[in-house]
Length: 103
Picture (tube, rainbow, N blue to C red):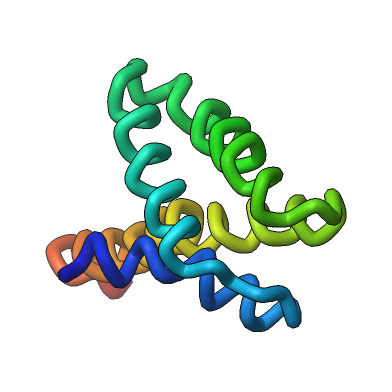
């Protein structure tokens, strides 16, 4: 269920950009992209994810500016937002274990 909802994110972004999200093709592209991204080592997977998504979605979205906006928004929601929110929770977690000493 989680993966399916994650695969719908590009379709929702496309709908927000007034594009016609072809949901079946979009989900198929996401499944293929997940398979491609899991093959290389993690540090190189970020560039492969953006490049692979651009390659796969270029068949669906002919406008390059919309494609670029889709890729940036998609990666921000699925990758960078997780890092940011996880960092905030990690900070609060460690802050509760090491309270500031009063002088």
